[in-house]
Amino acid sequence: MPSNGGREELLEVPLLEDLASVSNRRPSQDHHHHHHQQPLDDDQRLSLGQRIGIESKKLWHIVGPSVLSRIANYTMLVITQAFAGHLGDLELAAISIANNVVVGFDYGLLLGMASALETLCGQAYGAKKYYMLGVYMQRSWVVLSISCVLLLPLYLCATPVLNLLGQPPDVAELSGVASMCMIPMHFSFAFQFPLQRFLQCQMKTGVVAWVSVVALVVHAVVSWLFVYQFKLGLVGTALTINFSWWAMVFGLMGYTACGGCPATWAGFSTEAFSGLWEFTKLSTSSGVMLW
Image (tube, rainbow, N blue to C red):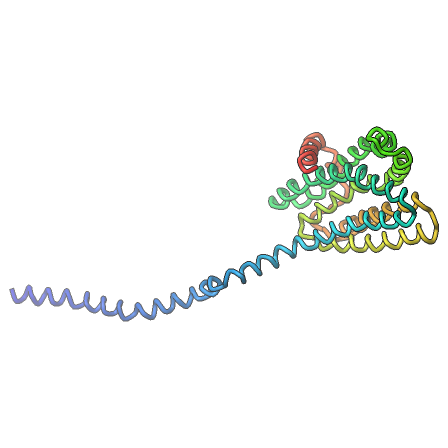
């Protein structure tokens, strides 16, 4: 019996020592573990206002340039109407109807059709098929150019359409003249809208904003020259909008083709003419939905 009791004491001693050693080591290990969790605790200590500020800064970094470019584009139309107002009430009415009725109908439809590019470019960018972004953009050029041709009678027949809608004959006639002068701007939509979506999908919204601001300055200068210096009247006022919109096309295309997008722009490709029917259906549905 004594021997058994001594044996039990010998067996129990190491176990007690191990428990004591574990209890002595635990505070230091817990302190070491807490030290590793310290950065996570610092992030969690951010207040709700600080988190909102950080996320808002990231959001405005993307949205801000897009808002600025839209404001610049809208201001061009406002400047055109302002200069037309200096010519007379009839000219102002004609430019306003051409901008708001004819160009407004065209602008909304083509902008919606170009929005289909956002989905396709986003998928290609996520799949790391970067060269497909350029191919999709060229397909959008083809589809939107064909759409511009189909919508061309809206500009050519603006006068009889406005007469049918009950506009005064003199206003309808001048609006038709102004609409025909804006045909070059009509075709610029087919290239500018896809270029904007192409760059926005790559987080290059700042480029779109700067090009839009430069085009706005060009538009203001050309409008002043055509109206006050060259005395071109209503036709000159309507023609000025073409310079600014095509300036945006050349500016965005110059940035894209001259090394601004080396991974996504590999030059013109014949792949742009494949799969046009599927692309047309997607663009049409997007245009009708967003119109």
